[in-house]
Length: 287
Image (cartoon, rainbow, N blue to C red; front, side):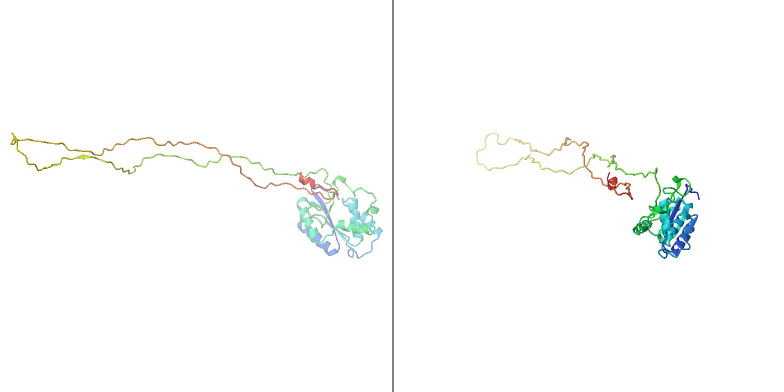
């Protein structure tokens, strides 16, 4: 079977045939192609006694698939212990994540944990590899197996040789600029209005009074001549005059003020998790 670059191979182990049958049917239903069920004659995981010859036979029987030998040895061991293997080949890229979800939801086992358990029983996977480090067929660069591990995110549970592929670490940077904002117009307009005013003024008047003073003296010559005496009367009156004087000047001037404004926002950053390394990679995200 040839691996197409447009598809992937997904495999998962199950403890019972019912779980494996449901997973295979669900994969076919969503459109995953070439779904194969292995170990159909098995009674169930743990129901048979493991024999080395059985593991070797299953190892050879799985030779038509693009499995790395170490994965093929693990699958063969699981089959020899009564388990079931569901393999889907040529899975389109857009169906990889849904297919992994199907495998997990139907009860696929954590194969890494099982391998640790088997090693505790003395299992040695290299014992079944007739050609260690080689793939069953085809170009090794294209031989990809996606082992499903329920202990991790299904979208990440892949043993894929991604050598040469890159993950871009993207980080947003906050750029703060300035722009001029029109705050409106300040306008000064002059106009004329009449304001009532009042003031007290002291005015003087001169009036002529007739005074009669009683006397007793001898009349002189010309006592009976006609005479006229007169006096002029004067009075002050208020005169109003107006004089326009400048009492204030108004002009427009601009005053520049500088202020500090605290800006808060969020930026997005790509974080990277590295699995399968004993070294501490936390500083990768702290750069």
